[in-house]
Length: 231
Image (cartoon, rainbow, N blue to C red; front, side, top):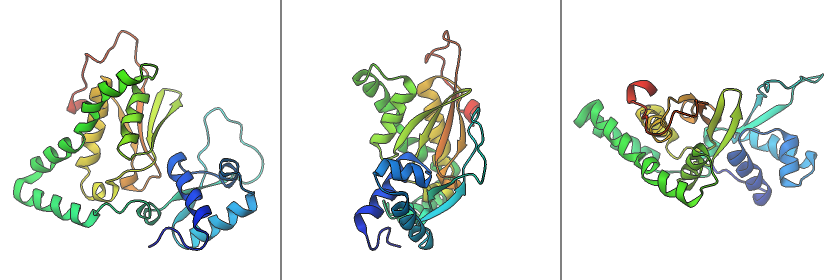
């Protein structure tokens, strides 16, 4: 399916804003894109009809008072919508991994997954040195964004959340979760702590979200996270 038909410029802006910022309300989209709410809703309705977007109930924010009336809907990209941005030879990649699994077994797939996310540890120190003002989790977001993940950091009551609005391998990772597992373990190793994957695009969530909990200041990166701890 083509992502965009009709008004190319506006449709692209709406879709890309949701890709980068995550599921969004019509009001927030109108504000970000400097459009009227009516114009945004017209495009949202068309994109829902074409299965590019889906409407969801907004998740309540901790500590935020709930207003009267029906809660605002948020709009998220569907799998078809994501494919409109990047078609990364998913069929070929899946076939290749099936061959790896058939000829080398689970361990071979695991080794491939670890090799694929090697960029996390290879680039972390370099990016941290280039941006000494960034916290470690913000450095990770920069590393992932450079690889096409549109990543950012959000605060939560228990720490930070590393949020990846896009996943270049989400379709293949649905069949081979080892890709997600290896990525989570790499995140834990560079941060030197236990992290927990809360959601993944590969399994139907709107955003890949990894919880990075607060830890006492005396714990450092020199205390690596083992694979057993993060699995």
